Length: 324
Image (cartoon, rainbow, N blue to C red):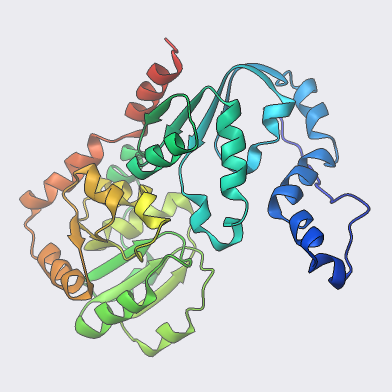
C-alpha cells in the first residue's frame, strides 16, 4: 500500500475583484462545484496520472463515498459505477447551493445508488436513480463490546456519575439548547461531550455538570463509553438529521449503553430499542428512565448492535454489487 501527498491548487487565473464576484457571472463561477473540479483538474501530482500508475484508472467497480469525488467518474473507467448517498448534503449550509446539482449529475452517470436512510431513498429516486438499495450504517461490534482498555479514563475519574455521554461532531445540527435544558433539569447528572466542535461552546461553561473533553482517538472511545451510563443524540430536527443514520447509535448500544435520541425519521424506522423524545421534557424524562433500566433490560440495546455489524453490512453490499 503506497501513500502520496497531493496538492490541489486552484487555476492560476481566478477573477478576484469584488465587483466580479458579486455580479451574476461571478457568483455562478465562484461555486464549490467549480472549486471541487479545479482541485482534481489541477492537482499536483496529477490525480489522473496517479490513478493510471496504480492501475486504478480501469476497475471493475467504482464506488463513490462522497459527492465531492464526482470528477472520478470522468477519470476512471468502471464496469459498474455506484454512488453511496449517506447524507442529505443540501442540509449543510456550505453545500446547499451545489450538492443537488452535483448529485443529480452523479446519479445520471452511475448504475446503482446505495442509501443509508429511507428519506435518502426517496431523494435518490426523485433525482432519477436507476436502482436504489437501502443499506443503513453499522458498527464494529467487537471494538466496542470487547474493548481491551481497562479501568476508568483519568478525565472521567474527576466526573461524578451518573454520566450521560455524547460522542461525535458538534456542528450546526447539534441542539445546544436541548443539552442546556437537560443540564438544568438534571443537576445531579454529568453531561460529557467528546468530539470536534464547529460551533461556539462558550455558553456551556456556565454549567458545572457539562464537561467538554474534545476529540479522542477512536481506540480510546470504548473506554469512555463503557464507563458512562446513557448515550444521547440531541439533534435538531432538520432536512439533514431526518435523513441521518447515526453510527453512534450502534456504537453506544454495542458498549452496553441505553440510548436517548431526538425522535428522527430514520432512527424511528430502524426499530431500535432507543428512547425517542419528541421534545425537551420527554428527553429529560427518558434519560431518567434509561438510568433506571436493569442490566437485563439493557441487553436489548447490545443485542440490537450485534445484529447490525459492519460484517453483516459487507455481506449485504456484496449481494447488491453481485460479488460472490
